[in-house]
Image (cartoon, rainbow, N blue to C red; front, side, top):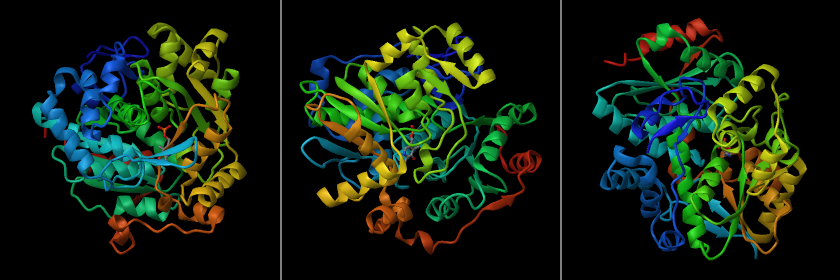
Amino acid sequence: MDYISTRGAARGLNFEQVTLAGLAGDGGLYVPKSWPSFSAEEIAAMAGLSYVEVAVRVMQPFVGEALDEGELRDLCEQAYGRFSHAAVTPLVQLDGRQWLLELFHGPTLAFKDVALQLLGLMFEKFLARQDKHLTVVGATSGDTGSAAINALAGRDKVDIFMLHPDGRISDVQRRQMTTVWAPNVHNIAIDGSFDDAQAMVKKMFADQEVTNRFAISAVNSINWARLMAQIVYYFFAASQMGAPHRKIAFSVPTGNFGDVFAGYVASRMGLPIERLIVATNVNDILHRALSAGDYSTGSVTPTAAPSMDIQVSSNFERLLFDLEGRDGAKTAERMAAFERSRNMQLDPAMRETAAAIFASYRVDPDEMALAMRGVYENSGQVIDPHTAIGLSAAQNADIDPSVPVVTLATAHPAKFPDAVERATGIRPALPRRVGDLFDREEKYTKLPGDYDSVKKFIMSNATPSDG
Ligand SMILES: *Cc1c(COP(=O)(O)O)cnc(C)c1O
């Protein structure tokens, strides 16, 4: 499988190259040259298979020559063997129509483990082949950093430098990063906000003094391999619920549009999805775009679901590329205009195409708390704030009431105990496997919020690409 950039000008890459590269050289995002597709018989044959077997079938066409079937299966067995539930991503029924797909049974209690555990193993495999050293640099407001550190700790030929805003992430989130002691893990607390940290990372990717010596890479959801790994659980859940003979809908708590884009790819591949519900909190740029064609940025309002507090959704560009008929030049023009004006209007034809598969719903803090309380009272389930936004959207979105809806449960409630306790009166306990998090010693470097200090620290601790 070849990969092309959404902005049409970067050179095409194969799967191995695209996994190590992250962003395309023309500023665009890599996507497969065409969407592979499965027949109804192939989907029917997934019923009853293990998560790993579904993963191998769904990902093989994207991986192409980079991994043979045995190698891919081996990596999936290792990655998903680290999940604490035998089903990997179990389905839970809430009532006659609503279901949860629990994606939080990985090591750091959020769905990002599903993709990052696999990505860590792929990095190690590809770097060994190329005899190259990689330096992962990222900024986190919580979940991505802990999942990436857990996935990369102790792996050969890769270092990770993760910046977080000092004092502005939860204790659980910080400790999940700073109590991981491995020589290749470097936690940096910067004096500043998440946006300051993110701006430094962006600057570093464009700094030739850094990029000439070090191969730097990203682990956020602009990385294609992450999205690919997330397509799997849509197939896994749908085939257990009767696909291809019965249509189902998914409700997805959305921030960067990565997780729900993976659902879109599943539908392009032939999975009969009735509708994908894009659930947002009050930071609702995606709801405005899909319901009224208005993709314009405002300022971010902090909420109890911080992983959805975004201004711009990077992966929306991948959808725009398809809506523009996969025309890279047109997408590049559209994105350049957006980067200047912070505002974009979708044409009626684009909106109509998007509306055939996407619905959207904006959930305010009261509706979120109501969903948490309601599901606890009616089924005894305790859910996290992100999942509650998905569930509230699932209950309220305008779709055919005869279709079952699966809400993606993206985080374990114990990751956000204060918000859960406020809504339900229950303070969820950390699962046993991470239970000693508060007894382990922390290790991180505090740096002032200026680019030069961070750059100096990374350049003196990272390994050059040929090292
Ligand atoms: C990252 C995250 C999201 C948003 O996922 P996107 O792929 O960015 O849309 C939702 N919930 C939780 C708990 C997350 O960590």
